[in-house]
Picture 1 (tube, rainbow, N blue to C red):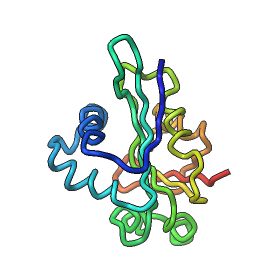
Picture 2 (tube, rainbow, N blue to C red):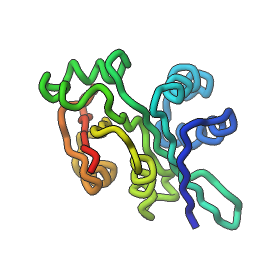
Picture 3 (cartoon, rainbow, N blue to C red):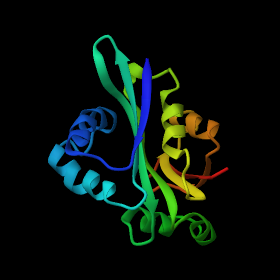
Picture 4 (cartoon, rainbow, N blue to C red):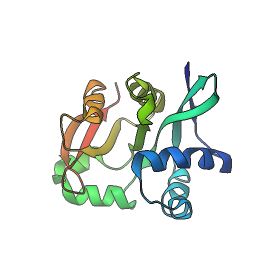
Length: 173
């Protein structure tokens, strides 16, 4: 059985539990200390931070199999400022600043195929106060992540920060 939770504050233990899953899914940075100082600790300190987690509560005990997190994106933050330079000015003005920025979402390979990604997305975005949500993902429309986002109402709003990426947006309904 899989259970899900949502937290808005995290402990040292939460970071240590999340790290191996993050590393398996995203691969970089490959050093826990770098990830903590350059990514995680900065993100958890931002207003609106929230973390959704998926746990397999099987016979081997409770094990983290997926997560998603984000926070309120604002001008003056690195990603928002970079995205504003790439998007059409009217699009950037419409979508960026005060938006919910979905930073990362993923499920371990052995736990995929059971709609955990969709469940994490719903847990993470349920009850959000922000009207506009944004994320960056692959430009490959056939990628499973893109199928998930499209099924949840996300649409491409512009190019991503690197080749092969796009920025997607969704409005709260």
